[in-house]
Image (cartoon, rainbow, N blue to C red):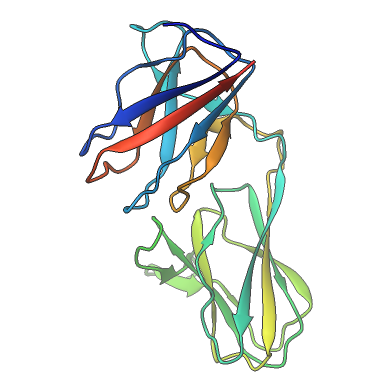
Amino acid sequence: MSYRTDTVVSYVLPSSTSLGSVIDLGHGWEKVSLELPSLTTATDIFLQVCATSNGTFTRLTENPGVNYKVYSKTMTSGGTLTAQYDLQKPWDEVWFDKPTFNTNTAVYMQGAIGSGLTFQRLAYPNLTTGTMQTLDWVIQSGTSARMVQAPNSFRYVKLEFGSGVTDVQLSCNLYCVDKTSPRPRDFQIASGYSGRIVPVPAPYQYMKIELATAHTSALTFNVICRG
């Protein structure tokens, strides 16, 4: 097989397969991107890499390079529950910027273990009683214009308002912070992304495509190599 300065390597991931076979790019490249097909079923996508074709493949990791990120959702008049926040990972700290708004209402946080699954209010154990009880994480009504520390153990969260907001449009921001140096993490293309070209952080000659959930039909991925 011959390779040019710019090369596209196509790979077909069979249906009902969560981990593909080895993709040989011929050699290492300066830049590598992955063109995603359209997925009828949303799933997270990972890459596994190895220095040799018959070695042990492990997930490709990246250094995020930042330890601070803001996630925002907009609530319209009458709403009591924001859309799902995808924080991408658990953070050392999560802070809610509770703005000044017209409705005097309490605010709760809900969490779920997966995207689109059942969300429940987040609570803390109350250790001051003889039997185990819980206390909801809640910002009481009347509190506004405050930065409030929130639970940080869930990737997927929602904000719940005790009564419908009356503001025409209300921005709800979550500020996520890692207090330590950024740690390497799995290179991951979050579910919901398809039909896009995504840069791959580190070029390897040998890679495999991994899906968190196997797709019901075959998928064609194009690996775009430059350099």
